[in-house]
Length: 118
Image (cartoon, rainbow, N blue to C red; front, side, top):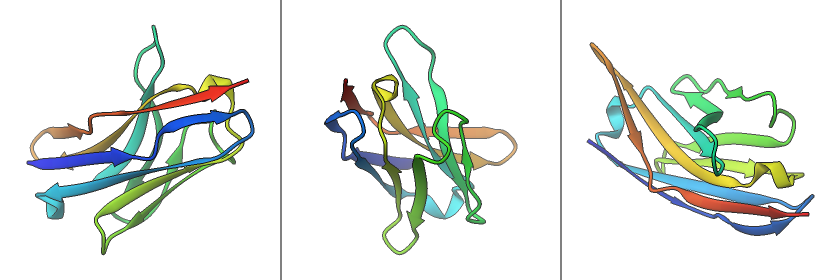
């Protein structure tokens, strides 16, 4: 089992910045990849960024050049630095931890609201 606790959401004006944090606990040694997803009202949850255990990164096209995902292994924490925020970035952001065994196990945080005003 993996427990994820997110923090850092809020209200910001367009062009502003926010940093999200996700602290992991439990069976963290089993985690293969962590990431951030988001879900806007009336839309499906979508991938924002991922960072596998090898430290490589992957971003959705819509956030490339504006968002940066990073991890602090000593703190078991993943961050999402969001710059140049746009109103279309408004969503609930969810932290994800993925464990790959015989099948894929996905763990989710409770979500944190990010609202970008125009």
